[in-house]
Image (cartoon, rainbow, N blue to C red; front, side, top):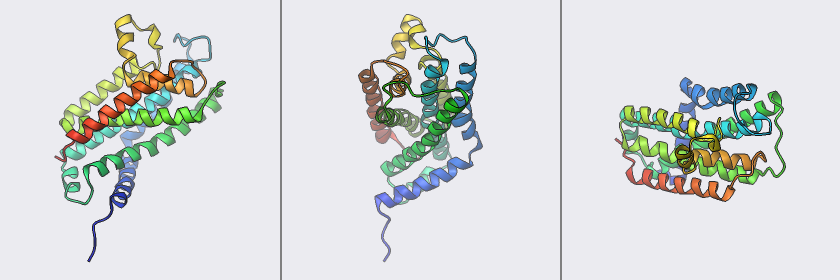
Length: 250
């Protein structure tokens, strides 16, 4: 007699399917790859941004990496999952051995795979086209920690919206948050150059924390790493906990 697949086997199988589906969505290329690359190349090539005394790429590369993670974890994941729920795909998965936790784990794993490809591409462009090099004190360990916590925070937000809101509402809110994080996340403009109330708000958001943590990790900034990691951890734990608690199959 056959037995249901184990939790690990179910998660691995679902991750493979998620990767295939992601590769077939042409709009994903625009959001997750093209936009961060354009932001990096365009703003690094003009002299209109107050990015400090260093080369513009030193400030913009960490921001572009943070933007890529936001695009993949929040926008792409949230919208795709919301429409899967709207079309009844998740309802059918709910009748399989795949649990809600396994589904969320598979989706987050897929996001991480895509993000690794994004990081490699953006760093290669920065190094080969813009002449970027890691600064003194660069730390791959800090980078990986920041990337994992950033993914946790933004994927948690994306899945929270997808599991609780209508697909149309998730589409609008995800894109709205993407623009807000782009403007307030220290991605193309330092948070210190924002008006006082907006700067105070930005300091509490995971986008600015992720960009700052990446700058420290790449040796291009000396921000408060402890605070950035704490902000990301709080957002990540809270968003994932709420997503797991409120996520609905239909």
